[in-house]
Image 1 (cartoon, rainbow, N blue to C red):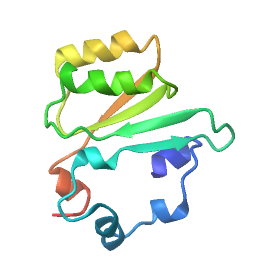
Image 2: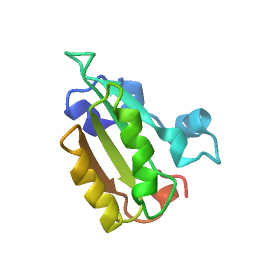
Image 3: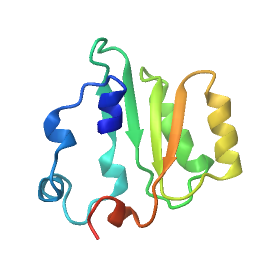
Amino acid sequence: MEMLADRGYLVGEFEINMSKHQFLQKYGENMKREDLVIQKAKRNNSSEQIYVFFPEEAKVGVKTIRPYAERMKTDVLQAILVVQQNLTPRARDLINEVSTKFHLEFFQTLGSPRRKLGLA
């Protein structure tokens, strides 16, 4: 949320400062990464939006990325993938291919996803 705020997206202070307890109340103890999808608009231009996707699969391939790309075709031209492991080579190729239509970045979490979220 801090990164989105730094990039000029509309993010509430409560989202940035959410405690572990509040996070668990919102998403539950056994949440799925897919349930964490975020969509935010720019502060100064609500038509410019971004998605943040958290794929469930440890190693993300083309099969995982295609639905995200389809979802973006409608009106959201920017997205961030937060992956657990590196992308497959074909997934990287697909990201390069779709980059002519929209901007798709990916970040890899370090260690256990539950630990990274402060849940372990």
